[in-house]
Amino acid sequence: MEGAPESTFTHGTPCVKGLSYPRRVYSPDRIKYPMAQDVRGSGNWRRISWEEAMQRIAAKMLEIKKKDGSMLGLALTKYSGKFGVLNYAVEGMMSSLGYTTRFAGTPCWPAGIDAQNYDMGDMWCNDPEDMVKAKYIIIWGANPAWCSMHSMKYIYQAREKGAKIVVIDPLLSQTAAKADLYLRVRPGSDGALALGMARHLVDKGLVDHDFVNNDAHGYPEFEAYLRNNVTVEWAAEICG
Image (cartoon, rainbow, N blue to C red):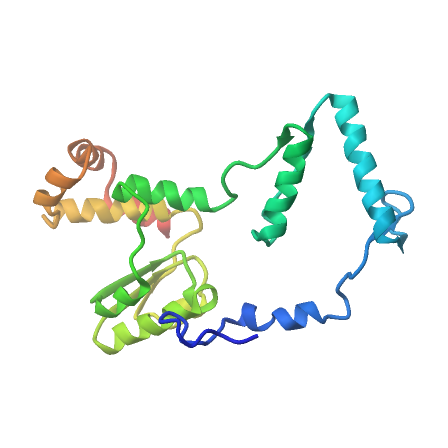
């Protein structure tokens, strides 16, 4: 396992997860062949041949189709760690048998997509290298030191150029430990924190009215909501 030196993001340095893949492949605990349980829940597993495994799976699938008239009763998941050729091959095979129950979207990514669409009108992400040019970086509920180690390089470079790093997180993560300012809010209270920050911007006259009037929808209603329902003190009490 080695990185791609031509990558401008990783510069040929894989993350720990990538470097650990060979250990996973050659682990003595890895299951390398089909196993069958004698009685469900017994915990008594025995090795079976690939032919027997295929026959069992095919027979069960045809049994379900005969009983239900379709494959709707069979749920498939594609979020078990792979999105490669085998994933789509299995979906194609299931489609050839009839309608099946499938996941729409993903367990986590739609939340990020919706947030960007609501906040910015589309799903666009800045190049991580742009962080080097930033003067103020807020890392909200994320731990790039563990989850995006290659981004940390740009965060450190920005800091060397004078940028201030702020981390908002209930947990004192490795990233938070490196921050200039760490805000430890109560779990689930960051929505109140965001509203309190917005009210502070309104009170201090820091809102860019040219921007919100020309490039945002619903700002007058949002400001009215803030003035009528939100105070900085209210947010502080909730956030702790």
